[in-house]
Image (cartoon, rainbow, N blue to C red; front, side, top):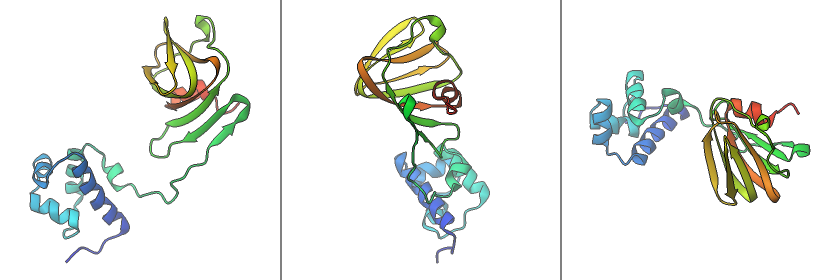
Length: 188
């Protein structure tokens, strides 16, 4: 007999099984990592046993995730509309799953700024990929050319700036709170 549970209960069970499979682990492998018996895990995954909070905490830890992520309800709205800043050639999407993380598509039309005072530094890391054109990344004393299809990731404690070379370029970037505040300036 299976446990009558909520949609959330079913979702948690599916997540446990999917994460275990993604790690390539058998029930025995996960059981050893979370100190439960393989049969208990099997019954949890199939809905034949209620999930106790202490068991769920141990399972989450063993799977390398948090309890919050395991029990987070699935959003009804999975499609996000962008916020457009046409004057700056900026399209921005907020990521719901990662608080403080923003994905932005930017159209760069100007070359990188000149002079060390134009470079920005802040805590964190940034990542971007070039969708079209060519971008120059100024990173400390380095001048890096990033072509279409290439990506760059760097610590933002190094002074940095981006610019287009040989015509407009489009990039897709991922920014944390500090990067968004520094580069996207939402209030403009």
